[in-house]
Length: 444
Ligand SMILES: [Zn+2]
Image (tube, rainbow, N blue to C red):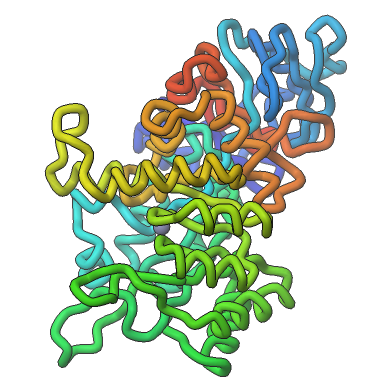
């Protein structure tokens, strides 16, 4: 990554490099309302014709297609011979590259960083909000430059409502980052979550504790009022005897959460690993189940019947197992990962819709593609399946009708990668161009 572009006030666009003197100079210039330094026609308003080797439109690969971008949106897509650049626009030749819809991360925590750097407990208890937000700004930038132009960020894990401000900073062009759907604090049943220290101390928790009719209604409404796009509940957690995972909220409580959120136009996502936690969440009407590590064929069939998607987060378990000393490729699969394989087989057999999300933050932001790679390498999905998941699939599951595909009228959130990711999934790591809303953040 050499540089990125920021758009100010919707008009002035600056090209920033990382040399501090230049950043300072340009930020100073921005304050003085400097003229754009980018070439004419390169901003959100100017027309740009992108001519890659092929276009993956969210469903299929089309060799020889081109895409026209105008006013921050895709205005045309089709065989290159049929598309011309309007007067005043410019052409961007992208030989050898495949153009994709901007990828959509389904499960991130921008306010967390990898647990092998700092334990989750210490992040929640010892790191200041300012430190965590400063890190999150770097995480947001890495996510965007990795080609993920949208992220569903599922909980600040003790950082309050900081994700709302982060989202505003991105939307206002103050920092580069993906478009965010945020969950704010997330909801846990009292006593079920962490950190847990001495019983004599009530320490800050990684999510908001709420219970019962009044408590849950109030907490859901508070999170929505503060800016939650989705409401996240922990339907089970490791609070059973000997640290086993058991359900937390009752069926009635989960139904109440969904009902309260839905009346305010928000969907609910549930963290759930046990069949009973998943079953309750599905019956309550949640839209996605996160993790589902112990899911059975029966509960996945119920999800399929109710149209509930699974976001399997296979990269999270893969990372934490390695943090605990598992040598991948040498040691046998740890029991938890064996269980995950059985659960994924059952989910695939049941035909549950799969969202794409890795629980990024457990591992490094910017490594979002790891989930896609593991689903192909370790879980038998095809590159085409995971590409659809990360684009049109996630857009559909998250109700984002304005993105996830390449077709006229949609947001010009586009990524170009070297090679053909429909054949070799690792190509999604070879990001050469990132455009969000018609603004280039990275280009060859
Ligand atoms: Zn998570």
